[in-house]
Image (cartoon, rainbow, N blue to C red; front, side, top):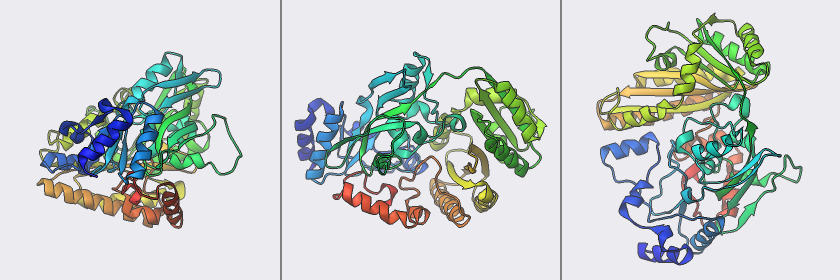
Length: 466
């Protein structure tokens, strides 16, 4: 079908005002926030333009669009806020379904502490609605202000406060989605079920390849009470890792815990030149007995007393990197006109964490001017390693080559040492090459599920390598 036929068909379904083929609208939906996409924008490379953008206002309209797209073999890509960083959005020749007009809070059940939010609800919109009633979701990714509920579920996101509240999968108590053929599926909102496999969970982390999420029921919590902070310093990263493991396994549940290696601590302390260098841990506890839990963590962790004021600095500036990242990728940051920066988050058990850390860091260091890493999420069984790479490239082509090398080296070494190639950013297209090795025999199962649910391969083709 040509562009005019596609536009006419869509307008007949949901109305003229909900369908756009305007050039500026198409370009605005053509890229995500992945460094590869932003580098292409910086160099003036033509984006992967969609053929149309539709803005449904209801699950019924999403159903109509997908049913029509399936019958006409027109590929579609769901779009939340476009903040994906692993090339999850490359809609060349596709219809983009912008979920931004589905922003309703359908229900706030204070007795059950459950909120039902449509997929297009943004982080700030949800936080404002909950805080007005004395609640919080507790899910605060660094992209909180520029991402949506549907995007969190589709990428299996994990917020910075996961040590207390869990990842998004721990907060979900129900999902409504539309399948490729237009069928609407909805799960009951109950605390737990033993009613066969949890088929609805297929949508979590599916990145729009198995269906389009239209609404989510989420468990909420009362706003946290008082807070107690703790900052510790360590001579060696190994000592800090041991401390993080002890705190996680003791069940102290810090609201947040970050352990920065020496290079990453330099980034964190760039506006605090008087602070000593070396591995640095910051953490906070909220609620009942938070001071007692802080002292218990202090005794368990060892280390040297740090500046507790740095914890407040973390809370105030925890999302600043979003703006700084864009500046670098636009050629306006400290790394110069050809600067390049990226982040790679992996996870590993405590037993394998040391080897994963050193293997990846040693492989990346020759190809970057800075490689820092911090433990950003901790669990009794292991942790997330969050690497940040930056380079003053000699040209945009040099920057592109460094990106490719960083990913190849990091993924290869992570898999060799038994880590997982993604903790919370998802797979997109950036990591798709390595997903079959990551999943092993389960990748064939995923392909089979895709074939059953989306036989015409219209849902975000190429994401997850599908």
